[in-house]
Every structure is written in structure tokens, then in C-alpha cells.
Length: 329
Image 1 (tube, rainbow, N blue to C red):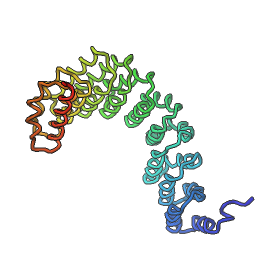
Image 2: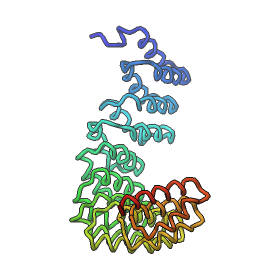
Image 3: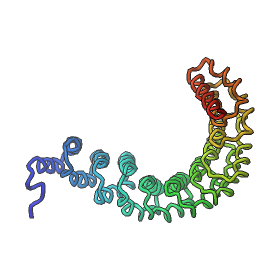
Image 4: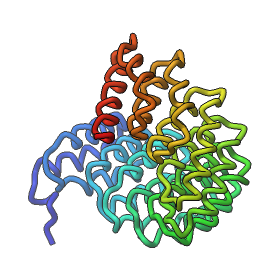
């Protein structure tokens, strides 16, 4: 039975070069193959994944980013535990760019691999595929001893947006020992619906008091995304007003933005005061938030901000003034 390599002289020549005794020749062949049009040569990259030379395996792994298939994914998985660090990294990077949900079925059996690097790479690879089969392995991985694995598991569940995962994610917001896991979980719970908002709100309020500012920043951001009942929105708004006094301006900025999204009327005075902050990005967010509130009492302060030394602040203040004018007609 003839193959494409029997019928295509150019590909046959490349295949011969991929078996050359000199690894430099084999590596250059892989690099040249990557520049060819079409996908008939993709099987040659898969063959090269098994090359005895690490540099050849790494180049083949990189090249396969453009040729996703069940076979290519299956060929890349063993390289996640390759003896060479560059090969492992190249395979993980290519797998992280997968687009087809069918690829998840090849990867998920390795989600509990003995090596943490493999577990991390597998979870990272499947997160954007949103494959239903990812849910159970990701939920189990929330209890992994490796923080990087837990963080990737959180991200997978955040993409899947399953209400059943919220209790486990909410627990991580307050209780995980790793700040990056807490931060990831804090961002992931933003999909909670109004029926799940109360326990999530409680966890996010804890997040606003976290010792790590990046967690507080994420909590301030997520509070502006939640679907909250009126009492919960008021509670969140008051906590965000307090966050406008955070030691880190990044937290203050996200708090201002979320106060605008929540249209928390009681925040007007605190936001007006924030218009005088030395950091222009924060002044800009305060102006935009005041526009969302639509309170005419903020017009004098916004009129001053409309002459700010920073053009972005001026633009935001003028936009806010236009919003308030439209709201009070």
C-alpha cells in the first residue's frame, strides 16, 4: 500500500533526512518542514517526537502547534515527562494552544499523572476546551498537594462555570495556603448566579481582607461582576468603599471600578475624594464610576476633574458629566 511519502518525492526526501545520523541535519529538516504549506507532512513531526536528540524532539513539539489532531496530542503527552526540560516545556506550550474539544479525551487520562508538571500541563491544556469531561478531574485536583496543580484546576472550573463547583471554589478563596490559588479562586467564582451569591459574597468579603494585595485586587474586581440581591449589593458596596483606602492603589482602582458597576449610591463621597489621588489611573476610574452613579451632586468635583493635567482623566470626567446630564434630564 502506497503512502503519501511514496508519492511525494519532496516529503520522501525530508523523511530520509529525519533519519540522518547527524542530529543537526534532522533538526534542520524539522525546521524546514515547518515552513511547508498544507498538512500532509504533519505525521513527520509526530515521528520526530521520538527522536533520540532532545533538540529535534523540542522542535517537532513546537511545530505541532499548527497541526492539532488526536495523533499529535497523543504523541506530545509522553514528552511532558521527557528527561529534557526544553522538550517538556515545548510540549506543554504546544498543548496549551489546543482548540478542538476532542483533544481533551486524549489528555484527561493523564490528569492524575505522578509528576506535577504533567498534571499542570494537562489541566492548562484542557481549560479553554471547555470539555464536560474536564469537570471531575479538575474538581479532584483542587485537593492536589501541589499549588500549581490546584491553581490550574481552579482555572478549568472557572471556564466550565458549573454551579456545583462553587462550594469547593469558595472554600479555596478563604482557606488555601497558597496566595496564587486564592487569587485564582477569587476570580473564578464570578460566574455565580443570584441563588449562589450569598456564600460567594461572604468568601469575597474575606478576600478583600486577604494579606496578599493581589487577592484583594481580585476580590474587588469579582464583587463588581456578581449577580447580587439588593442586600448583598449593599454589603458588597460598603466593603468596596472601605477598599478605596487600601494601601495598594491597584486594589483601590478595582474597588472604584466595581462601585461603578454596582451603582452603589453611598460611594459618591468616597469616589469624589478619590478624584484627588496622586495616581492618574485611579482618578480616571473614580470619574468613570461617578458617571455610572449618575448623581448630580458629583458634578462640581467632576467639573474640576475635567480640567485635570492627565488627558485620560479629563476624558473620563467629561464622559461622566455627560452621563449624569443624560440621567437627570
